[in-house]
Length: 260
Image (cartoon, rainbow, N blue to C red; front, side, top):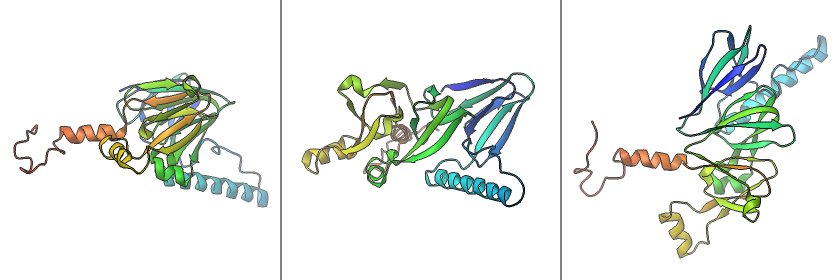
């Protein structure tokens, strides 16, 4: 399992999703906030009605961000790390054994990532939630909610297994992927979900015995796509199998062997 060790210059700030922090040096401060970087530290205005209006708008913006993250099943808060007095160091990691990648945003294209991929980013990168629509969500599962990164700076993402980099333009403009294998893709890539075959004998065979369910993710266009070689579902099934979870037959697992 990989981890990211980030060097911070004095005054530089990075933020992460709660639960991704590993360690820091003592000259790095840590602050937990509900607000994301897009409205963190925005001025609240002056005194009087104008100042109250600014504070109200900021509070409403924070509430909307928190509500979106709650609906998406994300952490409600972010942790911010700032170096004070000399160069500082902070360590981060994902939640599954796998690979990490630093994405460099130059302000021209946004990046979209599946909802568990985000690890950390510079404070100059804005974090948002992108909803793919009810039809795509119902069909694709993982595709209903995506994380969206805009602005300039570095974003660190993580996935399970190894990463595979593809461009649909190199394969006729379109690729079809297991919905659980999509980690991230650039703005300009069209993401959708399609049914695997029809509701016929072969379609049902694919869904029941092929292990792919009824849907595949489709990625079209010209841009970078990052896939992962291991899905959370396949990892969970492997762990269940190792624990004897699929060995309960007519004997009730009488002849199964279990460690411990």
